Length: 103
Image (cartoon, rainbow, N blue to C red):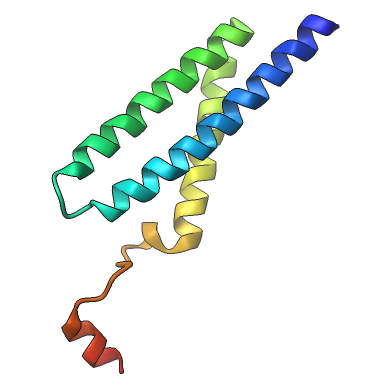
C-alpha cells in the first residue's frame, strides 16, 4: 500500500513538474517564434516530453501508462494554448499598421 502511494505521489510530482516547465517553455517558444531561439526552446520542450515519458514508465513499469499520461499532458497543453488564442493563429503583438487599423 505504501509503495503504491509513493508511486502515485511521484507520478503526481512528475506531472506537476512537467506541466509547469512545459508551460514556461511553450510561452517562451511563442515569444521567440520569429527568432532563431525558437528552435532552442522548442527542442527543450521535446526533450522534456521524452523525460516525462521515461519518468512515468520508470514509476509504473508500463509503457502504456506512460503513453496515456503523456497524451493527457499534451492534450491539456493544447487546450491551454487554444484557450489563450495562441494556437488559433493569432499574434500576441500587433505591428504599428495593425494598431492603426484596429483603432
